Amino acid sequence: MTEWVAPIPAPDLAVAAALAFRSWFGVGPDGVWSAPGRVNLIGEHVDYAGGLSLPIALPHRTAVAVRGRADGVLRVRSGADRWDGTVAEVAPGAPGGWAGYLAGVAWAMRREGLLPDDFGADVTVVSAVPIGAGLSSSAALECALAIAVADLVGLTTDDTGRARLAGCCVAAENEIVGAPTGGLDQAIALRATAGHALLVDSGDGSVAPVPVDLEAEGLAVLVIDTRAPHRLVDGQYAERRRSVEASAERLGVPSLRAADASDVARLADRTLRRRAGHVVTEIARVRGTVALMASGRVAEIGPLLTASHVSLRDDFEVSCTELDSAVDAALAAGALGARMTGGGFGGSAIALVEESAIGRVAAAVASAAATRGLVTPGFLLAGAGGGPAHRIG
Ligand code: GLA
Image (cartoon, rainbow, N blue to C red; front, side):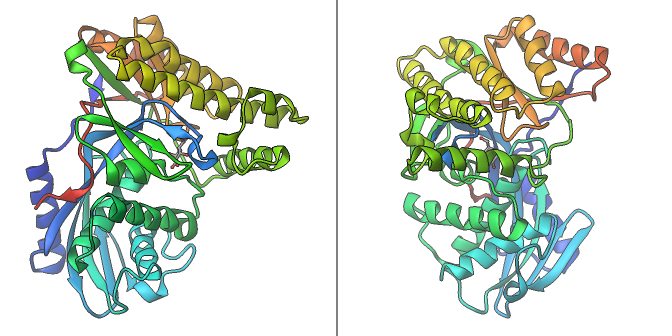
């Protein structure tokens, strides 16, 4: 038996968020906005090195119902959880937990001069993005609120405006939540184009949609949520980021984006050489993937995906037993390529599979997990690339 995690259609998500709002606050919201979770096709652990990534927005989205208020007060609700405070009192580490992502966005937007001093809001959250699965549930939460607030105060939400909002969401995550993540997740959640993957250039902040018509090729991206615990604030992510930045410093380059294999070979420290080697080869794999996709050869990207996994597993050392088991089982069952996706240390893997093989590959992954005594994974289909954060109700 394989467990599938279905997306929630936008109208249902909008109704659920508005109903939750009414039951918490006794009135209706000003509107409901949603933002997608993501899988990264390739380009992992390179965003904070100024590299290239190629995420796709999931059909699974997070919705926020929001009503603006003009007294600086924030009241946020998710399920049975609640936090009440003011935008002015938001500070590093406070509030903690999920509320920090929301409060942090308002804090960062105010610091950027995008909000009036008395801006406040009541907010309820409903999400179809699995939490803690490496599918960017946190960025979806941040970006849904950012676009909601932007609409409520009348900010421009063209791509330049969205890039600015993405910066605020990253600041919220880095400075208030304390997770030193790059900007990949927020870029896709706010700047995706439906029906496309997004080439995110973290060197200059630009994005470019890349058509990804998997269905026409009879292909699908199977997402495997290993359900192994996944945390980005536990120090390992920060340690990898530091080693990438230290490598650039030793090489005298602004970021590893500017380095090549011969530069990496000059690093005396073996660990730094392996970490930097991953970054440089991964950026090359993204270029290779985009080139194949641009020439209609998406079925051929499989080996690049698998090579990315091997590099993340052996050189960057961010994989884990559950992810390796999922990747190995998917490949053995006929996937064209497979890799961990997102930050790693748990979370999700993806497999590029022929549509006719989806069930077989999922069953093989689930059965490998059972045989090894691992937690039962969940499965999602990435679809054709969802749209960016926008108003849904
Ligand atoms: C997490 C971070 C991103 C990125 C990925 C790894 O998802 O939030 O910024 O670094 O890990 O590619």
